Image (cartoon, rainbow, N blue to C red; front, side, top):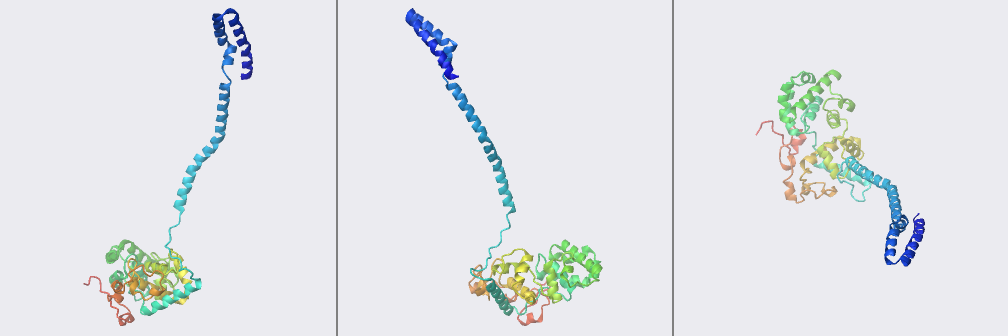
Length: 360
């Protein structure tokens, strides 16, 4: 169209030039202006740039429209990416403690090292025993439930009054909760613990004839009783092997790199695989005693540790022998133990009985 318009404009321009020559300068000027204002001249004057520009603009818009979906997708993808990142952050597993086995240690070497540590600890603590006072399975069960979130010493100072007043499951099942709460107040969380011990006493009375069952599957059904409590009872009241995974046990087996698990049940399985089943109960005592006396959570006494050559975590605590000696607790530091009525073997080894509640 632009080319056609230009061709039509050419004769008009020619006519204007002829008129200018014959009529003179003024006529030429007049005719020229008139010709310029004519439609043909307008069409000729207006170059094909505008339509070209419009076409280019239209083409650009179409191209932009084609690209637009990709940009739109990109905008949508950004929040999706952020959401995915947020979800990934939420779903991230809890960070485990870095407890990989020592470089180059094979599974067989780990078993040998773990068993050697247990043998060394057996020589250091030949008198190791459960540090709760008890005369029968019922007393051990109740004392173990009460030991949550407190020390064995405080439980041992509290249970004499409890068992003097409620010696059997039947007695405790029928007890006034407020009276039991008052007795258990020194143990902390006394209301929750009162509910647990009265509840388990009722279950023992109603479902087991007033006797503590000797099977894991029965024990864990009782109020306030988990696997840890059940294994304490099974191992020490019935002589049935079990691993007691308490806070000390968890800490030490990770320091020794026996396992990198953090879940108690998985720790139990991993450590149990390193030892014969017959060793499980005594192993639990050895590890827990060492954790309470030498290998503390915050300031392990590395310089006074008898198994330092076998420990991958040596150096995390005080390595100076004299300073480390001052960190030792209970009989290792010359202090009373946690039991008011400890075994004779403990006393023969230089251990001291704990004082009763309220004693100076």
